[in-house]
Image (tube, rainbow, N blue to C red; front, side):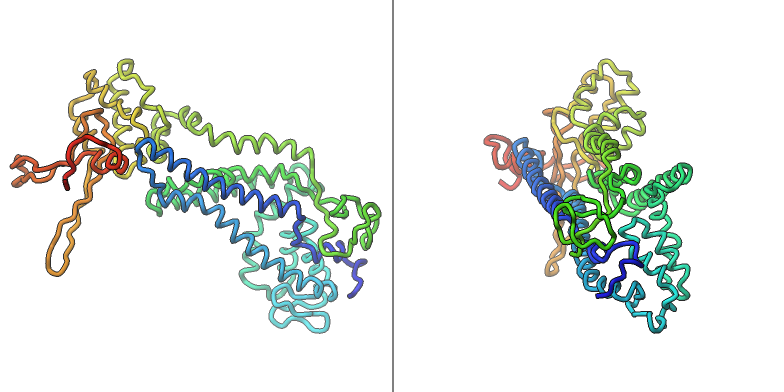
Length: 466
C-alpha cells in the first residue's frame, strides 16, 4: 500500500470510506422507512374500515395506492443503487490511492505509464484527478468535476453535458454552502437555485396535467413527497451539515495529523475505511431549520384553510380536482345567500358529483341543492341536473358465438335530492325522441348497487334480479 498522504488533501480512510454510512444514520433510515411503510398500511386499513361502517365504497383507488407508494419505491431503488456504488467504490478506491489518483474515472485505466487512449488522460492531469476523487469529502464535487472535464481532451459527450449544463445547478448549491464565498455570490447562487428548482417543478406539473388523464389528482396524492419537493430549496440554505477539519467519526475528536493512525481520545483505528469524517453538525442552522420542518408537517393539514382564503374561481378550480373539504356545503345557508351565489355553489356541487369528478364523501354535505329548491332559490331544472349528475350508465355490445348482447353498467351515487333519490329506469321505448312508452318495467336505485346496503338492508324494494 502506497503512502500518498502528503500529496492528497484527504486521508486514505476518507477516500475508501466515501460511501460508509454511520450505523446510527443507517438504523434511523431503516427504522424510519419501516415505520412509514407500516403506518401507511395501517392508515389504508383504518380508512377502509371507517368507510365500510359509513356505507361508502371502501375500495381504495389504485391510482392513490400507486401514487403513495412511489416514495417507497424511489427509496428502495435509491438504496439498491447506493449499495451497488458502495461495493464498486470500496473495490476501486484502494487502487486509486495506490496509483496516486492517476486512474481514468471513465475507463479505470492506470495512466501513470501511458495515457488513456479513449479519453486522453495522462499523468499530467494528476492534480485534477486527485482533486476530483477527493471532492466528495470536501463538498466541491461539481466544481472539481468541471475543471477535470474541461482539461481532458476527449471526455465523454454525456459527461460534458452534465458538467457544463446539468452540473451548473449543483455548483450553485455548493456555492451556497461555501463559507469562503462572499455574501453577494452566495445570495446570487441562492436566487438561481430557487428560480431553477421551481421552474423545473412547474414544467413537470404542467406536463403531468396536460399529458396524464386527471393528472391533478396524482399531483395532490403525492402528499408529503410532493410537499418535500416544494420545500427542498430551503434545505440548500439551512443545511445543518457542513464540512470542517478531519475528525474521528466515533468520538468527534479532531485529528492532529492528516495521516494519524490512532485516535488520541478514544483509541479508534483511524486507518479503517470511514473512520475519519469531515462532516459537522451545525447547531445554529439546525435551529433555523426547525420552523421549516414544522411547516412541512403542519401546512398540509391547513390546506383546506389556505385554499379557502383564495378567490372563489381559484378555490373551486382546486376543489373540483381534489374535492371540497368535509362540511363545506353543510355550513352554507342558502336563505342568507343571493340567487347568483346559490347558483354558483349549486353548479360547483354538480361539478363535484359528475361521473369523473372527485365526488362528495358524506351525505350531510349533499343537501344544499335540495334546500335551495325548496326555498325557490334555484330553477326547477336543477332538480333534473342533480339527478343526472349522480345517475349514469355505460352501454357495451358483446358478441359471443354470433349472439349479440347489450351490457349496461350503471352508476348511481348517493342522491343530491334527499330521500327523493333518482332511479335508473329500464324498459321504456322512445321513437325519434318522442315520449317514452310503455312505462319502465323495473328500475335501479343507489341502494341496489351499494354493497353495504345489499348486505345489511332488511326491508327495501325488491332488487331487479329477484
